[in-house]
Amino acid sequence: MTPTMTRMRSFPLLLFALTACAFTQVEPVQLPTATTVRVVPATLVPTVGRQMQAVASPQQPTADAIFVDCQFTAGQPTTSHSATVNLNYPQRGLIAQQQIRYINRTNEVLDQIVLNAEANQWPGAFTITRLQVGTISQDVAYEITGRHIVIDLPEALQAGCMVQIDVTFQLDVPEIGGGVQAYKGYLAHTPRQLNLSNWLLTVAPHADGEWIVREPSFIGEQTVLDVADWDVTLNVSGASEALEIAGPGEVSRPSGHSWHFTLSNSRDFTLSLSEEFVITQAQTDDGVTVELYAFADAQVTNNEGRVLDGAAHSLEVAAKSLAMYSDLFGAYPYKRLVVVEGDFPDGMEFTGIVFVSKDWFTRWPGMPQSYLTIITVHEVSHQWWYAAVGNDQALAPWLDESLATYSEYIFYEEYYPDLKDWWWAFRVDNYAPEGFVDSKVYEFSSIREYINAVYLRGAHMLHDLRNDLGTDAFFALLAAYTGAAHGRIATSDMLWSLMSQDQLAATQSTRQHYLRQPGMLP
Image 1: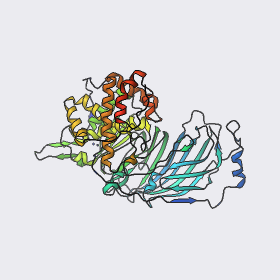
Image 2: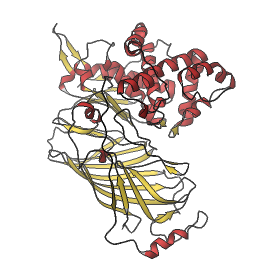
Image 3: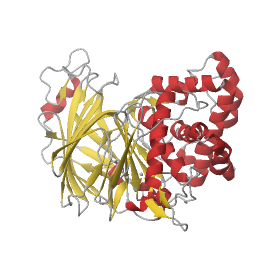
Image 4: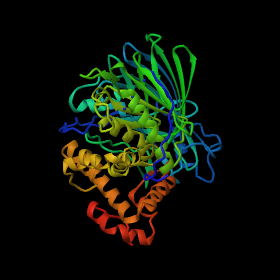
């Protein structure tokens, strides 16, 4: 399907219940310098265990290794997580027992593993009480610096071998703060909502001999994540029977206050909890269920007495955009997509679940010309430009944000063609954007500058590339890119490599105009 088609889809709505990005000027805040804490187990790893590091080889793994398994890794995911979490809902605190099984597919011998601990951004919120490696659950030495944990492996991890890491940690979820801190509300709480995003540990990607970790910034995102499988059981105490949990993947209820989630090939695992959620559903023609978790304030009565149902509108455009992007970029891989009204500014994407700010629901004017429309479809598109096709969000943010912003235009072009010019004027040209599209997040002094260059000029660049190639070839390129980079961490060269020599020549001027590094020459 191309954006010029006029066929409209029908979406049966189950009315009962939501997500967003408002791009306001927010000056950056100087982040505190991360402190390194080295933790050494009370009982040191035996010397004989450490001497084993030099014995094993990729061809002849140690047969009786107690820390690694080299025999049964074929066909298994590189990383799988299982977690049992006990959450005290009134206190907004939890204890998690997380098991990580990681297979070394780097073709290098690893003597360390690096984990991401995003929750450690908040002082005093995150505490590790036990960290063990291997089948005998041996305590090991590790260092935690800011958002990263470096674990010293007691035995070298050969290529093709698997190591198991068991971590128990406590997390006191912070309140959603004001100012720039509010933009991190996807791991925070208000009196009516508890958001758990980037809360479980993940394994940092490893490439070219190093673990990929990025320094934090309040501008943009800095995560770089491989896909993994997730199996999470959440046991909740102290909540009423009205509690609802918005989460992706397959969901079951083993008991009244216990939820079990499984999610495969996902870069993250995110939940949102509330006793005030109003839930609505829609289904696409492809059989995907879109669930919207909103609050009562998503429905407002204007001065003329008209009821404006922002939840119904967000649900409708989420379902339409999901179906459209599936046609254009490749099938959405899950049975469900969850959209949540978030008690924090803007919007945020995660695999199978996205947030749209309450501001866009409560301010919805009753028309498609709104940030509620823009941000809902923007976040939905991230199911392709982030969840399916990953990228380095710190060093190459255009690979998800430029494409997500242009996906907004594609949606308007298809469903509201009379508003195409409005979108360009309101969303993009009103800000007279400047800057190189392929800039790093660290190159900007404000969020506004970052958005202007990466999001808005990025949309112009993609539109010009479309004009260079022609509409059919442009969307064929994006579909090929999604297929080639699915489940991977993409680079801009991956995209350019899919062009023919004639296409490289046709787009060279555009790439040189917008990009500091325009990529391949014809």
